[in-house]
Image 1 (cartoon, helix red, strand yellow):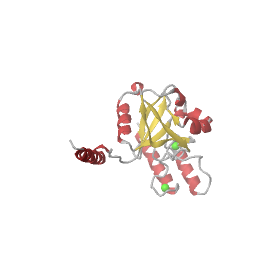
Image 2 (image 1 turned 90 degrees about the vertical axis):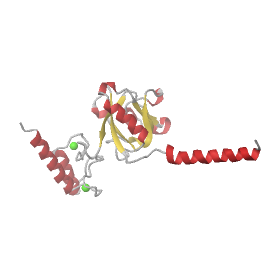
Image 3 (image 1 turned 60 degrees about the vertical axis):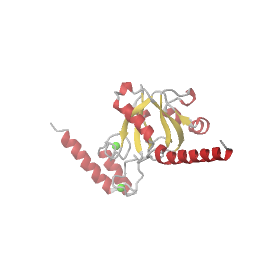
Length: 212
Ligand SMILES: [Ca+2]
Ligand SMILES: [Ca+2]
């Protein structure tokens, strides 16, 4: 075979692979979804939330969530960055969206607890750069249709405290140090009367459903 023909074949093959990569291998990344993780053997004060729109990661987490809690053996592993990223409770760090996945094994360097990361942010962010708590497991998906909506003060419950905090913020007083990612229930980028009304409605529904 002449060299010229070989080059042409390779070029055609590369083009075919490139097109296949574009149309077949690119994942159909969709909306960002949020998952809460817990640490086995620790209280929910160590829980944290990570966001992803990576279909492969979402599939991993969904598979874990289908199993009973004590059988969810995969832990999170990925890059972290400063701040709560608007999603991660009140922690001063967060797993970077789409830069994490679930793993069965990770190196010891990035193992620890969320509170360890919080207590030594500089080391974790600038030396380790990632976080892979071995004892973490996928607890639940959090979203607009979950109980989290209206939980303005980030304590995993929707009650009068949240309505009070909303009114506090509406009247110009300081709110809690960090707001829940689902605090803004009407999507106007502020917390106020609308949230208070919504929370009171939710609270009434919860009360009614708990009546005998
Ligand atoms: Ca709350
Ligand atoms: Ca609002």
